[in-house]
Image (cartoon, rainbow, N blue to C red; front, side):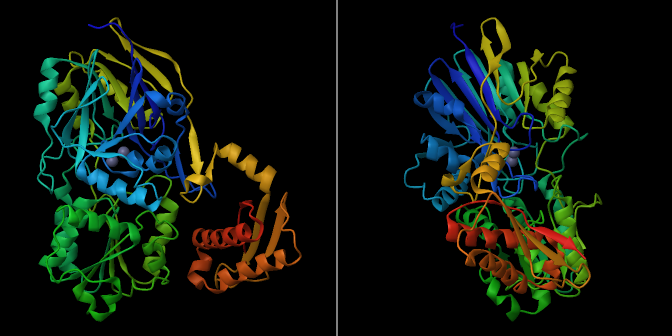
Length: 554
Ligand SMILES: [Zn+2]
Ligand SMILES: [Zn+2]
């Protein structure tokens, strides 16, 4: 065995949900697995996305040989626009993953400069001293891989996100053989997805939702709206098939839904028979019972197509009495309020709403492995060291306990978190120090809008640009605005005399252009006011104060 130290350094995703990113270092060479983002919680006002702090990679700029992607979910690729603008290194991904990434980089004007390299399951390639072997796995997305990384000290296996789906809708099977083969040869360490470690048994196949879809498509008399994550290609494929079988036209509403379905169609993952696809503008031309609308916004995002349709402000997607809305997705913890708010509006429109309420057959299945699947992979791989990844601390801990109880299959379990340096050498493995990690908040998705830590961001905002509080009194029952909006500022001055009345005018206009339903939906109305006011203030003053709309309920 060569002497030297192999280091594995998670830069995000261990001890927190999202922004998965892990550096692997041998001597002067570093590769990075995934570069994801985290969607900010609602308390991170004014922040659009959160990405990992990559100062470790910046400090070692010359050593970073490339980034290798396991799959195309945002928590694995969403940080790339920002990271590549800081550190332009080659990026390897499967065809579908790169297609999603190209779209994203294009949006940020970074596509031409990016060095993207295709990789294919079961085709090995070298990056520095490492040989990478992508292994086909199944997940809620298509074209996902685990990575076997051959290092001078032995093989590391990183599962990426996965579940063991024996019947994936694209028939691309989980390559259990490759895992078993590595198990026979000996694996230094296994890094496994912890997301669903709290669930017993097995996660159902993507095909399990087919029964529910069939039932709903068969029984829906009027318009049918189906919402799922835009990246749920299996689900979109199923909806297209069902629409075809049940004689409905299909329309995609929402930008992310359109992009994802276009990419999936281009790459042959979904096939839309001629004459089935219609433009959103054509929905009104067909009888209600002949239309299925795929609409984005399962998490109650205030500006999403579904949220807007729910309060009847979407141009094309009109939801009427007797229509059915099916939410084929899970409720991400933290989003309950926003989601039920949308569901409430839908009930108010007298739509029939189907969402994941635990009933069977399921309207949604998870994309992550449950306990028995986690055990299965551990048994096949029999790693010397086992390291849980992708999860909050309790999930990592539970996963460590699950693996630790599998005597004979696992040598030693190592519990590490983002920033820990896990070091391997001929003597074994240990935690060896820490590197700087953290969250970088980005405004408006633009790389020039990078701000530091949330706290620092708030402080900076407050000290340099101050705070603006538009205060609006709304009658909870009628949605009426009860008085002229007040605007209170601290540490911020608009300068000219006309500024404040202009700002009040902006808020008034936003309110006037909003329906009563929007006005009683504080999440929506606050976001609209914040967006409009932000635009006005930055145009008038070139400043970016913290804007916190306050609604006084009367
Ligand atoms: Zn993930
Ligand atoms: Zn994923």
